[in-house]
Length: 70
Image 1 (cartoon, rainbow, N blue to C red):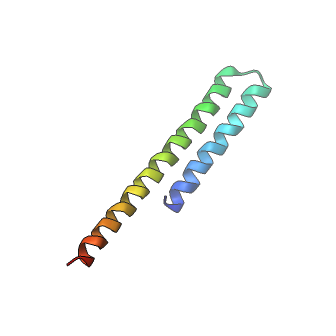
Image 2: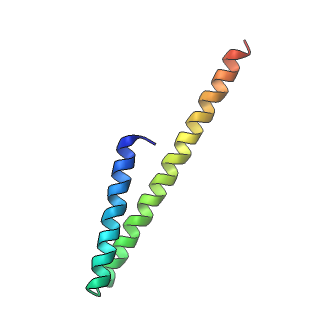
Image 3: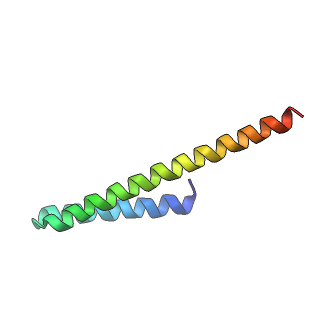
């Protein structure tokens, strides 16, 4: 995953945690839910980026194997 993606997803998760905590402290269920939603979204983005990076690595590995076989 790219460094920029790490920062963006980490920030989104941190903001989600803050929203959740504030919502919980103020008994604001909507804000608490938004915080949980932001955290889940960041987790999904991280998982997607990890899968993309894994696929790229496998593609590079396959390409190298094909060029080595020539």
